[in-house]
Image (cartoon, rainbow, N blue to C red; front, side):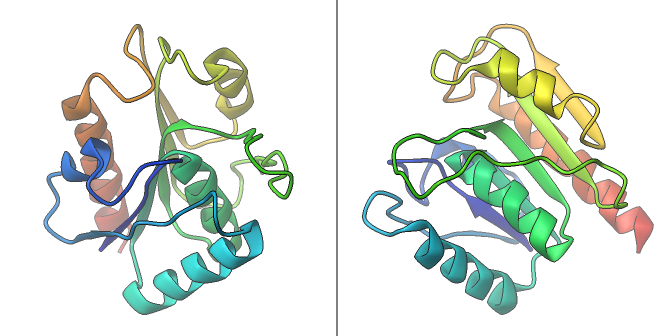
Length: 164
């Protein structure tokens, strides 16, 4: 099961979720603006306990949550243009990226043409901290190459299955 975390002002029908061609996936719409960080954290912990995912995937603010929950639960993750420095609420701290030496598979797919995030800063932070970093020149925040994003997710799933 893939547990997908959507971005700010998005929902469970985002193209990033629907483009994942893996049949066992789940995304629940979360209103990040109306719920504080602690409430969302508890909610995502409950979803992890309920669905027992083998992979977390998150886009934008969902990437923040995927990485945070990966670090807390030791779950593999794929981050897609993750927002590591949310500023829309005061209760969201900058996310500290732990070093990649804990043995947990963590992969990012970045489109370097992202016009919303400081993608170069995010690239510098993630480079060397994750298991793999896939970058595409061009693109945009909403993800231009959904097929490539899907292939990164499938490659992560293959690596997880080989480990079992």
